Every structure is written in structure tokens, then in C-alpha cells.
Image (cartoon, rainbow, N blue to C red; front, side, top):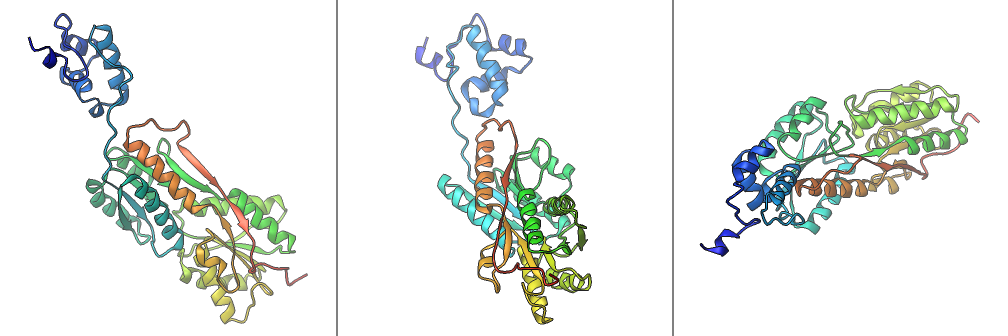
Amino acid sequence: MDIAAATRGAFAVKRSTPLAAIAASLGLSTSTVSRALRRPELVKPETRTAIMIAAKKAGYSVDLERQPPKARIGSIGLVVPDIENPFFSVLLKSVLHELRRHGVSLVLADTNEEPLGESEIISTMLPRVDGLILASSRLDEAEIVELVRNKPLVLVNREVEGIPSVVIDPSSGTRQAVEHLAALGHKRIVYVEGPVASLSNRQRRDSFREAMQALGLDAAGIGPYAPRFEGGVQAADIAVARGCTAIIAYNDLMAFGIMSRLASRGVKVPDDMSVIGFDDVPAASIWSPPLTSVTGSTTETGKMATQSLIRLIGGKAREPHVSRRVLSQLVVRASTGACPLG
């Protein structure tokens, strides 16, 4: 008998307890048991552990501490609603930086804020990647859950039960924004809404309402508008007509559009109207005037999402809390000032 051949792999053959008996005791196929012992990386961790323990008890020479080789990751996919939005550009750069450290390539897709196209884009991408980061998805929950059955998935700024996600929590930053404006004497503050299907929009709107109510102020809102410069241009005229003295926009791009339209109408920022955005994109600090904005580290968000996905693809267990939150805060610049009404 060739002893070397008999002991090759993760176990030594013991004829008195064949693999079929171990398989029957666990309710598994013989091929699954054999695969777990010879190629453990091909078997689910919980199944592999049960087989290893049963084989050890049956007298097979099994190393229970042995870990399967790490799964090789060739590429991951990143799907964003609009790559022209600086928030997603910063997120992209963060994901790329983290992937470079692991020698993994990236496949990028831009859905152009179109929910119907998003599903088709993801379907085309899935066969080409080992996992997926889905940022600010407009898909419904059932569609997202279906994706998980095909490939490991991590969500950014979207929460679906049981799926790992990284979410920027706007509550603290929004409260700071409202308190900042109230301290400047503003009482007529309006929130300009972004996309209806956006989780970020709902969270920012709700946080705005809570902060306003806490101060005894009416929480007025207008919109929704496209989350772009043009959307802000449209919103500016409505805000002026409402007689408000301060605006909190869904994102910085809309805030830029608002400020541009106000300037064309001769409404000075911040002398006549204060403006606050969200995301604190790079252009916020160099806009004229520099934009006060609520920030939640986009770079850290991209890093956390990428690390979570790499762990998932590698077969490591999910963290106890699959939804991880990044806190927000207000960055005060020159686009906010004292209320002109005194």
C-alpha cells in the first residue's frame, strides 16, 4: 500500500469508517464530505466544520485548525447613480485606493439616476466580478435581496435587513446645521428635497424636521428636484417666493445651483439668504462664497465598504452589526450669516 498516497490531502483513509458513513450521519452526500476534506475552500464554513469534527471522531487525521486558502479576488463592481456628482467621484477614489492595496481591479458602472437601467447594468456586470458595492441604489428591496443570491454584496447609503452596509448618518450634522441657522436668527428655513427613492434624502429630510421641531420652528420643504446643479436652479425661485431666509439643500450640487440662481437674481449669499449643502464635496471650499456643508467622511465610507466586501468574498463571517454608520458634522463657511430680518 502506498502510505504517501493514502495520507495525501487533509485526511488519512480509515477503511473501518468509510466517508459514506460520515456523510450519512450528517445528512450529506459522500462527494460533499470528500470535497470538504480535500478542498475545504469549496464548502460552506459551517458545513466544513461539521464534517471536520465528524471525521476527527471517526478516526481520520484531520487538522481542525487548518484554514482553507484565501479566495482569489480578481475584480469587484461598483455601481453609482451619477459619477459626475463629486460625492461619488470621491467614493470611487476611496474604493480604488483600497482595492489597489489588495491587488484587485474595479469594474465601474453609472446608472445615470435611472432605476430601470440600474437592474440591467447590474445583471450585465455580475458575471464579470467577484462581488459588488452598490451605492445609493434606487432598486427596491426584493431586487437587492435577489442580488445577494448571486454574489457577495455591500450597500452604501442604503439599508436592507441582513445585507452588510455602510451608511452616513445625517442626524448629528443636520441638527448642527439647523441649530447654526437658528443661532444666526433664522426661523424661515426650508429643506430642498432630492430624489424620492433616495434613502439619503429621506434621512436628511426627517432629521431636518426633527431638528426644526425641537426648536419650535416650522419644518418647510420643497421638491423633489433632480440632485444636480439644475435641480438647485429650479428650487431657488420657489424658496425665494416662499419668503424663507435660509436653505438647506439635499446635496452640494443643488446648493451650487441655488447660489448661482440667487446671484443672477441679485439675492446675496449670505447677506440676503443663507445656504447649506450636504456631502462637503471638494468644490465646496472654493465656491464663491465657500459653501457651509454637512460632511460624513466619504473617503472612510468607501474604505469601510471595500474592506467589508473583501472579507465577504474571502469567506469570513459577517460582523455582528452588518450596518455600519459614519457620523456627520457641520463645516461652517461663508455661505451662512445673520438673518436679514433681524
